[in-house]
Length: 315
Image (tube, rainbow, N blue to C red; front, side, top):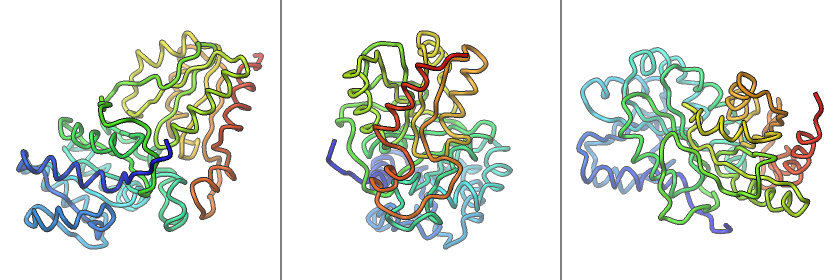
């Protein structure tokens, strides 16, 4: 769990793998080749890199145009710029036309705060892009999963958003673990009184919280939800139905992200006691991932406390 790997570089590794067998895959950049350390891809496939400069809206439009010709554009930029600066283009050009454009957002979450600070942190990206009809949203948990998610995303007919990190994410799975779009995965199972749903690069924190809850006598399980949209409702409903209480954990604002998606399903089906762990309605400061998680409450201690709050809730 202590091994750090780059989810940014994993994007380039996926592109290099895809490019060997798929002539349709192209990289669209808004001065972001360096973001994913794709210089070797650009050197090997110079005619498959479309550089738009610092112009995210134009880059999305270009990607849309390429998609209409049968190419498979993978557009890479910061998560905050994709979801905000180019939101209208993603909605009205890519989304409305249901074009096969893969958008990769780097610096997703507070875990990226050490690099450039709040102006470059994607804290609201999932919530914003969840509202676009037909958008698939993938939140892989480490570099290996990011690489496999991009390879899988090429199979989807329609727009896909994939969230990556700052380049210092912990390795959670070994390389044999597949990535299946739409599925969920149990990462800890000590009973079913409490279910914790989580996504992204914070899974090690969630797993440790499960161990602490287990030591305190709580029958708890943790479930990774790497596809935030569309939710795999059948499986998640089974977890909800057999749980006394629910927790969600994410490195994203609690408004509009995984917690909101699970809450929407929960309130329409089971209405189980629920708590959300994530960034509350604030802008965080700059700092290391550990410092920011501690200050803004994405910690083992907070998860444990929220678990007991939910389990003790009386309607």
